[in-house]
Image (cartoon, rainbow, N blue to C red):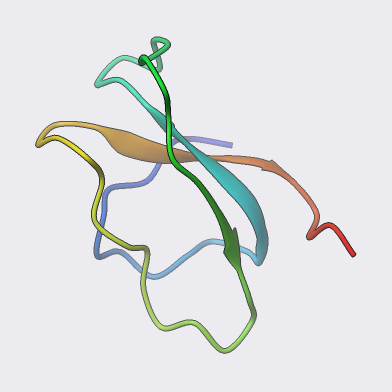
Length: 59
């Protein structure tokens, strides 16, 4: 799945990890859990970064 920008509607609920502009690793990335009712992805720590879906929500 392609990384998404902050503020976009999530493609699907689940775990997301902050990645660099070209899906590169970032130091101390934010990780968030997106629920089906969440309207958009949260801001990242720095401009230009994106959110990458990493799997289904963890219990």
